[in-house]
Length: 321
Image (cartoon, rainbow, N blue to C red; front, side):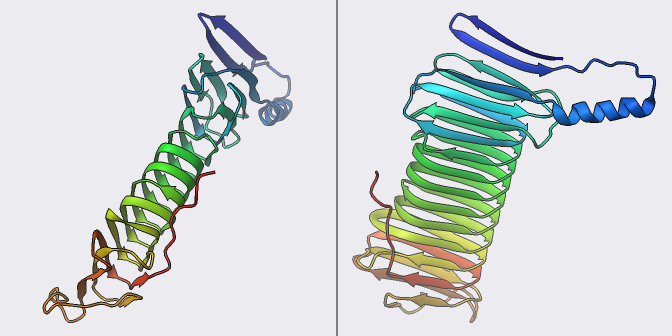
């Protein structure tokens, strides 16, 4: 038996989709097993609804196991299309707040939430296991997952991503970025704002960056920065086991400190050293401090096992559409 109830009171919409299975005693054990299998593979909880929503509001979307896709649009409405084969779905919403989540049931992977929201709505998404996609919301975004890939595009003000295992890609960001993961590659593109990134195992790739503050650290993997150096900026790039590649504009003004234990240092810019500035305790270790241009910004690039490359072809973020 399937029941969908809709309650409207005090401007609040509450929608709960539940699925109940009535046990029936069948004369044949084989027949009972056959019917249980048929019902388990056919039934679906489902919500498909549209309602008015304030663009200054916020949404919280979470699933135990499944995929989430959030998309921004120009309407002052939210559209929810949510399906699940093995879990119930709960939706609670007012004019400025919405919660969409799985409620009870097993954590099957056949849950999918698709939500369209007005531009500017604050988005918070969670999943235990599954992929997350947030595109075109032009707002703050928080995305958290234990296992699954996260893809984000067109964020304003703040992006906060946390995951234990999974790749992270984000582009078109105007605002601060904070990303932390235990295992997974991180790729940022076209970012205007401060960046703070940490991963234990994975590569970090930053391209088209215009920022005054960048911190990117990985234990195992390469780190790549391609962007514009602000004269008042601070940039810290480090890897324990991996290469560090730094692409800056030809007319950059910065003081660079580079250090590697067992790798080499290659630079398009001339390296002029003072006596004693390149010795950190071993003939294999290298630590250099030198300036390019007026030496205004501060850049640190370090790796224990890997090479450091500094080139003069860096480019910043593109103009906002």
